[in-house]
Length: 183
Ligand code: IMP
Ligand code: MG
Image (tube, rainbow, N blue to C red; front, side):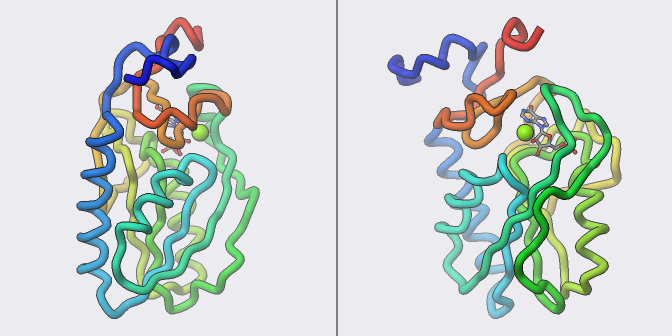
């Protein structure tokens, strides 16, 4: 771990190093490239947590593709409020398109379940889900990721786009946050 990063002191342990993440993201990008050959998919990122993953994932995709973003609010602190509200909608028309929804972490699944149903109404050709992290132990909604980089234990993790109250998104690795930080 880079000793110069002041935020390191809030991290209990590193779960995934920068190198491990890069390797896996490239692998998933290659799989998507072959699965969607000739289909020109549109990546729809769920802000804000997706931004680093989506940037790296798209650069490892070798086929023509488009991108757009949505933003939802459903979380404050470390626990979901259960309610999903769309705060930024798509700016592209996704009718007839192959959508790849890009999330930072699939936790209860409530957010993605809601978004999937919401997007279905716009008649896309298909909807697939690509998530950086998956916490299956916490699942409440019937959602499975089509592309998942890593399964993670039931702990609150930050870094590589994931935050705790808007902090730690810029950590280059993924780490477990010390419970003392949020308790
Ligand atoms: P879900 O609707 O419960 O699946 O929530 C997904 C959203 O919750 C993610 O996009 C994250 O923003 C947030 N989230 C869930 N678990 C964590 C975590 O361990 N660290 C940071 N954010 C998390
Ligand atoms: Mg968040």
